[in-house]
Length: 121
Image 1 (cartoon, rainbow, N blue to C red):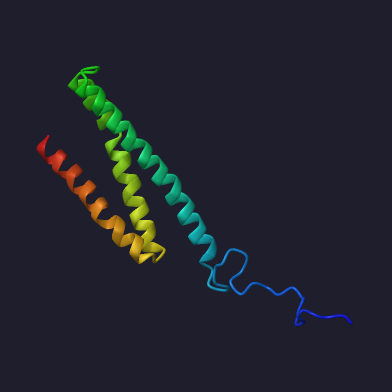
Image 2: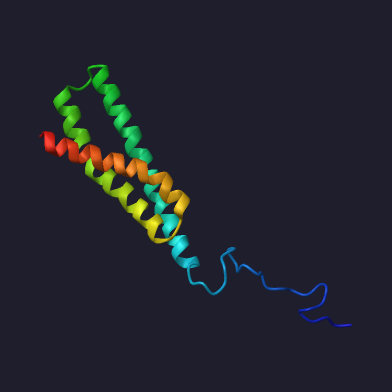
């Protein structure tokens, strides 16, 4: 006895598609790209944070002077702010409200501190 797709042992298509996304809404590809970019950007921001801590630790132990420390760290402040702001805006555009609301205070603080530093210079 042959069974068709409706039978007990037949292969059925997944209701959510191959990757669990909703069918027909067209957001599956965009969500994947957004989250892959966010993951890469998060790894880069973590690397920058570790680099900042190591450089500040070298300053504390008098391995480098203050001027050298500032020149090393200041060139990475703007890319850090831009990276965080881009991820925050991407989460807003892709309608991930919870992740957007988690990133918003940190992005706002980074932008505020950068503007404050530019005003004081």
